[in-house]
Length: 420
Image 1: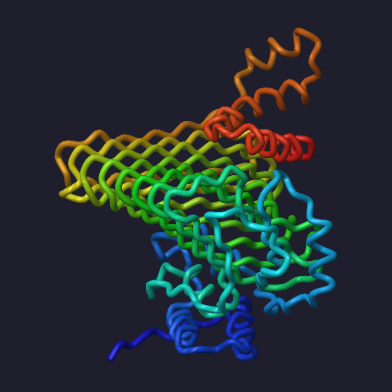
Image 2: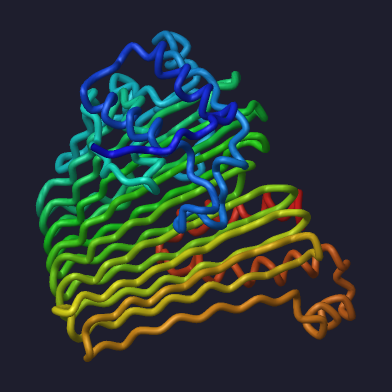
């Protein structure tokens, strides 16, 4: 029999468990998750994976679970949605998906919604997975058929309502063998309510598929966003994952990758724009499980005000995974004395014929570059913004998709107008 120590619950833990008591969708899987959460509580610094993001201290409350909008309100809000790029769009309000409002999908794509919970591994540090499983409601399923090439991006448009609430989001995405497509998972909030997202995406990239997956987080100044994406790559598969964090007060985005097919390639590009008193954490666990695979991760961070950022990146190479080529870099512009950024790269290598490396840099803006621009009549604020843009736009260009690049440059410009 396992014996767990008694934990004095925080206000957020009490609110979380109270919310479950009134949850209408209880099931055996939700019970499993909530029992695990009650046993372990929210993670603190003592949990290694959460050492730099002490959720027990940072999460002050958990709002009540969001209710489903009536269809008329949903249709009105869907029409008013502020898209950043033209997509095949599925509206998802407060965690509830509206399949009837989804734009017509082309041949080769199916988008459906059911209420199956994505089962999470029961671990002390898997708080996001367990929290999402405990309150699982709608699950969005996207399948790109084998061999299909879809030119228009598929957009999962997550929108927060205008009241404080807990939204739970689940996505299951599958790229069939040889498929080629782009998916944009965007979280948007217009107001500044103390909103909370708990989101899990399971992504399978089939053999010889070519996938681009984009996560954009633009929540309000008081919002909490807890996201997790679990990825499996097949043989000869290619995935470009792009993560842009440009909002929220407390954000944690977990990226878990299993490189499971030979000759596959995983690319991660991340941009974290951190200002005021924001806390943004990107944590990656990448496992090369077979021979002859490649991966490259580049994270660019801009920190100003009292912002705090975290990047934890672990690359694990199994003994069988010979000829692995894996690189990881984290570069940070630290623009204020009160800002803070922590990075923790890890390499765990059991194979002996590999090329693996990591690096991290921290710097302020180069004074000579700033002087050069100002000496040509460019005001200091504008000159600083130009240098910051150059730092992050370089990452955006790796998308090789002009409409998406333009959209993200627009988001970055908006952030710089406020924080630059």
